[in-house]
Image (cartoon, rainbow over all chains, first blue to last red):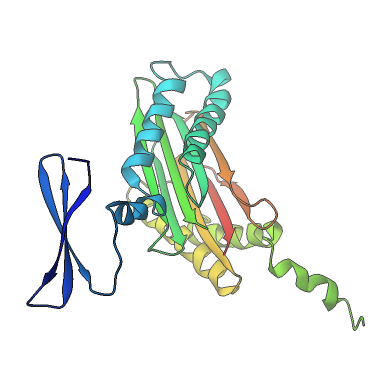
Length: 154
Length: 117
């Protein structure tokens, strides 16, 4: 069977709505839609992914960027500037590759581990339905790295 | 027909005004932590208050922007701290403003990002 093939379309006799049956990876998925909706393939549902902020996807981008740029390096005052710049640049490059209609803000904080206290807070005035953020805390033996990505729908 | 200087200044309602925002943010910081020493128990409350007050004042301006306000407070103890931001947006209408403030016992860095709607 073709993945996400719309196997069956029927009518719900009890409540006025259409029943679509999809088949994917040994599972059958039943979707109930209003009679007026037109739905040819599963792509009609998946397209929502192209216009929403997906936290897991962004979180992975952040983790990969930090591992690549900093990895097991020890905190070095002379190199931190370069690291913060590289991390935000890498993140932004990967984000623009997602090709979504979003504006992005990437923020990176690197702090040496020496017992000091650090607190950060963010607040946002945006559209809750379409915009989102993702913050990742990463550390190694000598430093803490906090990266926040904010995505705002265009 | 030019009726006065107002004709020229009304244009910046569509663009982000860094100086005005900087002044607004400094006032919010002073209002919350001016004159206090770093206190581990209160820091949580301070960062939350600073971002809330800043955002409230920004929204009150009534401009067509979405805002992100970020605040970091760090105790002064000799540790190194670096922050960097990068933005993928419309450079003609969107903007950011970062304010660094310090007193005897702590550093405070507040960043405001404004994205046109």
